[in-house]
Image (cartoon, rainbow, N blue to C red; front, top):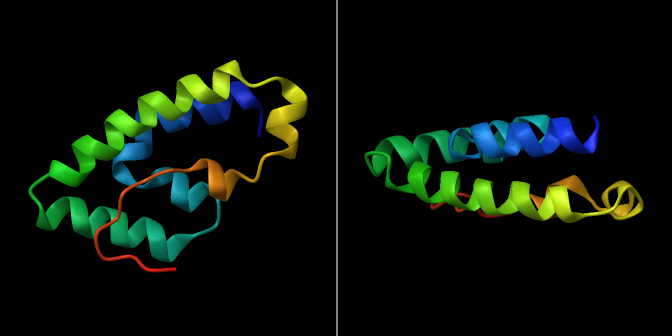
Length: 84
């Protein structure tokens, strides 16, 4: 996936846990959705804000830095119930 596509998806959908599904971490994505639902959207809003900041960070990266970065560690979502 290209850097621009990933950054746009993070920008738009990080609050919903979609980036966890993109990275292959389905369990974390489900916990993100559940925690956003339980907290009446508070966690979703926080993750949305963090998604905007993360997308800006990805856009600032060079192509080499993006290729070397592990997408799972780039994702910086708050999930209340998830423990890795």
